[in-house]
Image 1 (tube, helix red, strand yellow):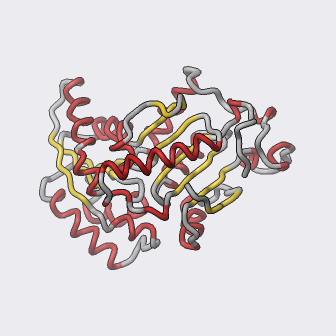
Image 2: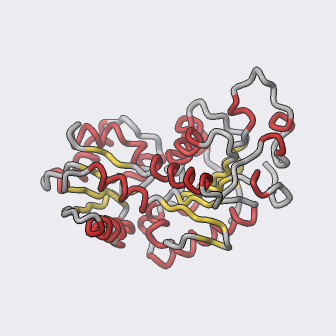
Length: 295
């Protein structure tokens, strides 16, 4: 991995930020939809979870993380963290376009629901009521009536970070947290933390198959595609790539096309669990580097 400041602007990576490994669920979707783009991921694992912090602290940490990625050289920033998105609502940071996970999630939920939407999030996200505001404003603009119910699930983040994905204890905790929403007969559930899709199977079992689960990765990827189409952002030109490795400069045509782009991952804490979860969550996606950094 290199500092990208001297790279051609269109060939700069897309910076993705989360408090830990949860945002890798968003990164995987973005990498699927934008196979030619470089990605630079930052997980602030040393200070997780964000969801238990004050709004002022979350805002400060978010600005520090965004600033770090901006200094590395990126052409777009993705806040792949609901708690951070709830406190950083601006569309730009240092003139770099910013995407958050809340607005796409609200749009997708409104399309899916029959009228009863649940929100499962960290305490910070639930307390901010940012999803309720976004959903009710959207519903009003489309002349629709929806009811919104929210519940906090603070233990989900450490469970996901520990990799307790299909554990009996996890299943019990998931069922306990979801009871208030199940009792409201919700038909759609927003996974209001990017760690929560890691526990998707347990969550789906608890609410039943009739409830649609919404995470914002797909909608967020669509928003980025629109920015490329509208030339708010410019697509990477692999032939002119200035910032990649020797492999990316002279790709072997027999290799998977994904080999011509880089995925670099940064963490603020030395952790074997972070590295193993990163590889597990990204699956077949090649990770070019995993490094520890200080913000």
